Image (cartoon, rainbow, N blue to C red):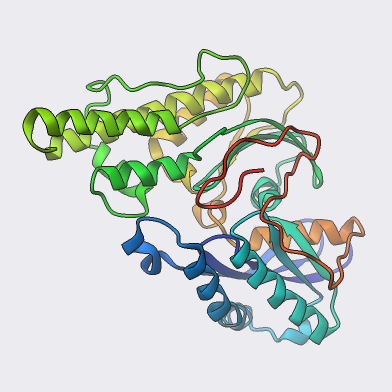
Length: 360
């Protein structure tokens, strides 16, 4: 990176409206500003993300987060060299809002425009935060996506497996809703599980008896529902201890699934420099501990970017855009918003579509 570049990144694929400014000069890019406006309160009453509400909020907040990012970085738009924006995959209304905002800025400023795959942003984050060298294994585990990716370069991804139904974060949200816990479900389930017995309920570990690295969480969620209904039928309700035990059992099952499948993915990929994880679910301490142990068993470094850069953010989009610019890729005003956009173009499409973004 010999040429100094300042990139404005824009992200709006789900329920976070984000803008960031990245300055690249020399080896290590610097994040000058990263602003995220969450929509949690807007969707709380619905038990999940409502696409129409999300799209409207993005349209209202995009200019504000860009202004805030510029203020934090103490810069003006005239100092921006290029615009990078999430062009998919995700909730199409939100993605379209971001793409249109980026097009307007690029046209008004006369600056290059780069459309970025949201999943590539996550997958390349360990390079930005830790300087992790290619190739490495990335487990992207979030509310809308769960994939094992071998990352051989900035635009070289091989999908080794992924969820065929619910993403883990989506399953956490659904279990929290079933048990009367608050949203988002991940932190609520983790907190309740602290007082629970993970061995009390015999919950399934789907697909562990099958070869390969594909995952499934829908049946596990249904098993929690049935266990809850049996408690209600037997005793007229669910006690706090019942709730804690169900949460602990569910969390343990997810950890077992991810740990075994991660070990399987690592075993089949020689020459890796590390095992990286990104996505909001990676913040769960039980899951993270299990994945760290898997990396240690494989004698590989475990890399988990800071939570603010694990969850949806625009700094990762700016970085992926920077790498695209360095490779000579620039988009024009025909750039389209995509609900689906597979990183591995040769892989068979995954079945299903989660509420927090289309799987690819």
